[in-house]
Image (cartoon, rainbow, N blue to C red; front, side):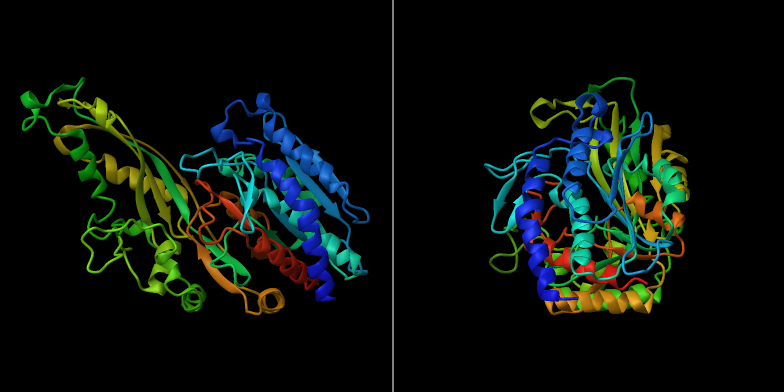
Length: 478
């Protein structure tokens, strides 16, 4: 392979065709079904799927077939199939994955920026969904086209691009079942919907945490009463909720107390955490927007993480359970809050799980801990669900070598291997469907890219280099 030509073609493709298409894509509020109950009527998901299908028609890939699939009541899906070249045969395949649905708007965007307002500044494309994960289909087809232009032999390449990922991929399993007879013997799953530890090398995701989420509601009164008359006799529903949460984690350290939510960490993952810590240094924890402290020990002091040990920080966000309260109900706004003892408190809970913990069993364990023997006989209800995480199979030597070589070609450094702290349900599905496959799970969501939040951006130069690196890895599959 002519690496200089690969870089030239991929860079030109991004500048001339992909970035303009992503600019148009960002303008469309194609929110995932969980955030747009009327998605079918609004037609935004259908539009971005149609736009991507239209774009693919311009790719110079012999025999490429691109279909829009639709199952009644489910969000649409794109399937593409590019025959093998160089006499490799069509039995073994590389399967690409991506999605086109988006998270909702979120507040806090800079002036002049917004979720549906594409802005290019300092080599970054701002707006919702460009990096998560609108670029995936365009990059995948560019990978294939780049190899074919040089006559580099490659396996048959297939791809699934769904539109329900940000809702937990509820529709993906049905499409996987329907497409299973057409996918062949999947040797490599190339998922382009993950993150990168920095913008200086290729990063491969090795694991994803699971998730228990739901609502805890504590009721102590039928209606609110004057706090002057009742406090001291009637316990605060918020204090009861605090007591219940103390059964789940230690409020001083954050350590989750339920043994059922902990897992042993594979030695390969510990080794990779040590290597990633050496690469990333203190950016492992410094990357977050800590608030300044008025009483810090020195000028510029800021709030501190639970640990500043680089390796322990990586393990904490990838292989340790952690509880967060992400929302609340039953609390009036500060300007409307009077001297009233509230009758109830509801808290939205988000509890991340180690990759190998069963999500449903973890949710049941959390539910039992919260509802048994409630303080003061309060009425406690829990609506809780769980999603399992994912741990990649042991890395095959050929994939390790190919990833390192591709990373060196694009950045001059070996690849980094690291777990991610988020939960992506589709990975567990793909692992179940393709237990013999190797996984190249990667992406462009690096430091400050702020997926799902305000000022989300795609690092354009990194995306170009990533596309070339993925092309090299695909060419190594036999």
